[in-house]
Amino acid sequence: MPSYQILLFGISKDLLKSDQISYPVEQLISAGDLLKSLKNSYPALGELPSLRIAVDHHFPKPDFLVEENMEIALIPPVSGG
Amino acid sequence: MERKIDLSEEPILIDPYFHFLQDPKAGGICLFIGTIRNKNLGKAVQKLSMEAYPPMALKQIERLTDMAAEKWPIEKIALVHRTGPLEIGDIAVLIGVTSVHRPEAFAACQWLIDTLKQEVPIWKNEFYEDGSSWLVPHP
Image 1 (tube, each protein chain N blue to C red):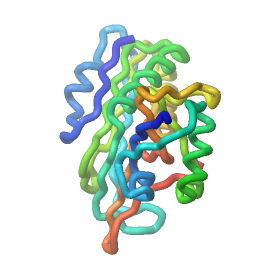
Image 2: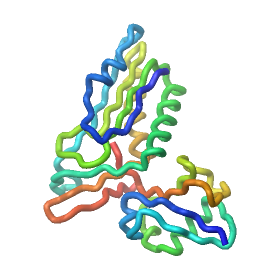
Image 3: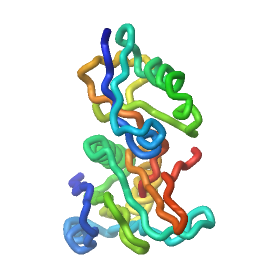
Image 4: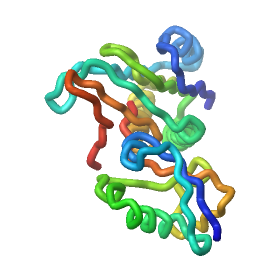
């Protein structure tokens, strides 16, 4: 079974009490489906005003197929500046 | 377009960026300096900490500078963002744009800070008298 390693930052790191999670899936899925699945597995993430998924340092289109060896990160609402 | 972009754990010094931005073709250099204020949403802020996702933050900043150069005729862009612990009054971000005429320097500088606040993975953790919290803007 494939598994995604997902980096966590900011409030999502606090919500999941870790800076990285391992997320097994039955088969490789799209960025959009991965985000939906994560929100289902961790309802606290779904309560954020926005949550994006980054793959290899950019925001992919929702239908982008995510591979296991890609660098995946959850991006909660940013607040730099 | 030439650029000087960075994330910095050390205090941001203005002079090296200003020197980089100087150009004989320039009619204007627009410099925006974002600083840490002592209040947010009515609550007194004592200090804060900036967390970044460094490789992506730098990539996003590079993309934004590319986009700005496509939108406006720009000679140079400097953009540096602080990370780590910051005190009230510290420089959080410096953005400088050099152009032949001033309107595009103003426009690009404003667009860069507005877009950075939406697209660059950096997060503020604010510390108050009674605890701390991640700032979560509602878009």
